[in-house]
Amino acid sequence: MNKPVYDLRQEEILNEVICALDENPKLCTNPIEESTYLGFSLYSGEEGFQQNIEKHYNDFIQYLNSFVAECNKADATQEVLIPVLARLFTLYRHTKNRFAHSPLRMEWKNYSKYYEIPNLKNDYRIEKQQKYTRWAYKFFYKSSSIQLYFINQLLKDVTVLIKANDIGKANLIENEKSDKENIIKEIPTTKYHFKILPSVSKQSYNILSNLHKNLKENGYIVCTLPEFRQVFMSKTPRPIIWLKPYNHLSYFIKNLTDKFLKNSAKPSNNQVALALFYDRKFGIFFKNKSIYHDGHYKKYHEILDGIIKDSISTYINI
Image (cartoon, rainbow, N blue to C red):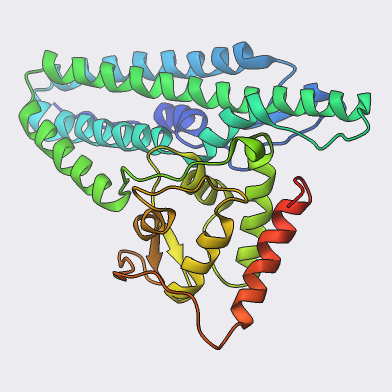
């Protein structure tokens, strides 16, 4: 009997709608219904998005079960079935980790609640635009959560098939443990985190957008906006790269304190910064035991003063 051949088509169709975040969803406030995520409009809502995934999910699970039956009938478990299930198990586990650690998803979640447009004159049109923008980000976040739900379901389904066919799950679990250790090494977190002043918290997303833009334009950072924001807003932040010398970083944090960040003693904000910024090259932290940023050469002071003032003063008087 010929060995069964795994057909990728159903898997590929499903993976297109569950395995990748839409990094550039379309945000439209007039009309709001034209906002889209992975090509699906807010008009059809999360329910329409979920129904589409469910169809592809059911088609794939039906095919996968028939493929398992074929392998059992052809006595091809070791040769054919194990590699397929092991690959699927690894694929969806890694996808789950990417979604769970995505700064972009956290940004959508926060924007869905706290997105704010400066509205000094209480203009109803601006207020309406702000409300619709929050709706769009809520749609993006909920859609990504639906993807994550089905990824978890697929992991459960594949695990059931692994157990049902008495496949060496111990090896997969060992591989999973190793992969998780590698992920932790690749995306380290720290117990240290910054605290934003309550007086500026409502405008923190906008202020951090300006800081990110100005720091990037002046050659201080290379990270994305979501990666930059989580450094200041997450309680389990992941470090990013700082491209300039340490004295630039310490001066930046010193001047950001009491304007945007709460003053902290144990640990100090500069100690937090040492745990959150890599020195130029990924994986190498600054090793300074003392804080310094003074000296005769003050040009970078003026640059950073300008960055901070420009980034905050648009929204808050400093």
